[in-house]
Length: 303
Image (tube, rainbow, N blue to C red; front, side):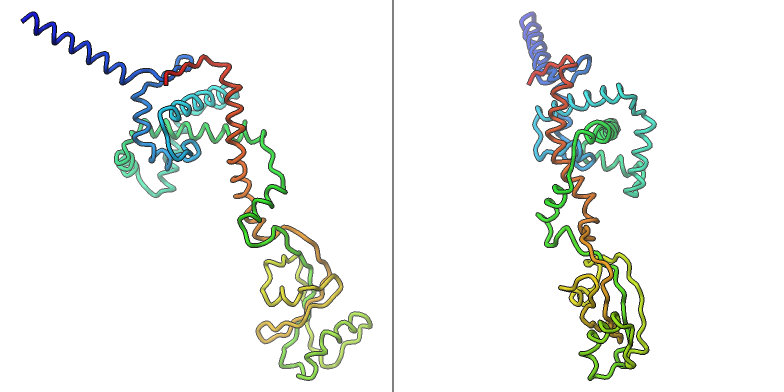
């Protein structure tokens, strides 16, 4: 009986040691600890975390070391924000979660079901939401001022991924137009020449007596129809375009002003391009910033 008791005790001690080994501490940062089981839990729902917070979980694959690095980074960021007076309260986190529910058009019960399906507790989700808010503030307040993005970089990035130029022409045009059926067919080839003469001497031929005009201010070439763009090709300031038929009207455009400006497509894409370049640049900037900040903390890893 004594032998059996001894054996059972030995087994119990062995199991306890194994349990401690399995749940060993892998990171100590001042008074904060991450255990191996903590890291494994995060790894078990890593895909959900990538969907919830792609700015924090932006790597393709995650090993325990990567998760430990994230833990260290999040704590250092939090400490720095606290120094700057940014303390994210539970009320702010709850407000953000409610906003997410509204955006996704789900209620709390549906959110909890999603989390359960993806093996992530609400407590974990709450903490991840808090870390995401902190990370976004960190990017905006600390990292963004350290990153400069030039117009050349934006244009270069645009031309790499687009089939059009980042520049276009901006025109101020005087549109001379008249019903095409009011123009004798014999005069169709003469109308541009006659309008050029009209601009010089102010004498308008009788067949153009019903001519009307309107002014188009600061219109970009890439916002014009193909027909109008083609009519303006090769034309300079103080010149008339070639005649172009639009609907039942014949139009000739007198170019009052012509300058090179950003294209409509480039202007619309700039914000997205800035974000892309910022993300690419921020990775190395954050790494350097973290290395400097780590010296302020007691950090020990067991990986």
